[in-house]
Length: 271
Ligand code: WAQ
Ligand code: MG
Image 1 (cartoon, rainbow, N blue to C red):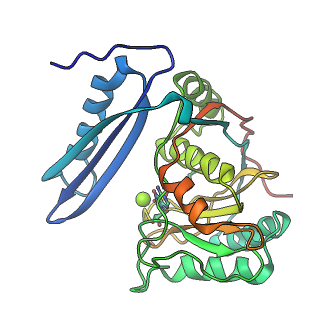
Image 2: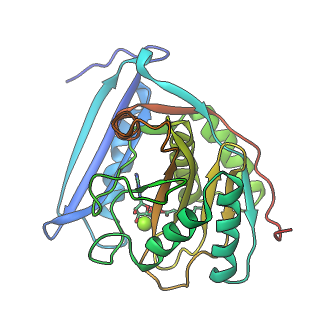
């Protein structure tokens, strides 16, 4: 039996990925203290067994100690929710917000078009995110089917408790919101990223967001028609300054822990 010696700031990465019918089914990960490894592993295994797309036929679980000195800590962006009546209005508003964040209109229109028609070469959703030049609108990710996957991020238990209470007060305490917020916090902390655009590939989840350092995390209640399985993420980068290899390494490997939360504002109509 393994005995982990809990130390106050010691963190472990607990990761799960599951497959079904020879294809990827789902994956999830957490960063937890030693005393929470066991319960966390159980929660991740359960997630693979009760997945909406079917029970996992195989899964791998990995537990790795993280060097505390290597962890980047950060704050979650503030959450705003703009209630729009339909996805065309939502996409037009997303383009306006991206312009405020320093993304050219050509780049914003191109990115929205890519997500709308399925950003992978086969017209489906990508597994990861597109990287798009904030000025030129050029696609910069090395693999247009896989994209860039952001991993190794989580919330501290204190930040999670606070976030859940603040989200619940606005009727927003859902896993989709919490997970997207943590991902957006890491993306906004990445070197060379100007803004992010996202909407889900879940056919029933029409809400997406635009995030930037100044705007925070701005939810738009409609960014695609209900029933559409196409979704994705776009990270807009400052082409003049970005070192793509360093950016991708940060997004894919840097351990990021959000240990502070931003404000959560009640949903409202756009002004
Ligand atoms: N790294 C990069 N891209 C990813 C990742 C990741 N770890 N996970 C998903 N993607 C990309 C991929 O193209 C998916 O198809 C797409 O994003 C959408 O992923 O505030 O549920 O997990 O109400 O379906 C946003 C709004 C919900 C939440 C996002 O995304 C809210 C969502 P999904
Ligand atoms: Mg999804």
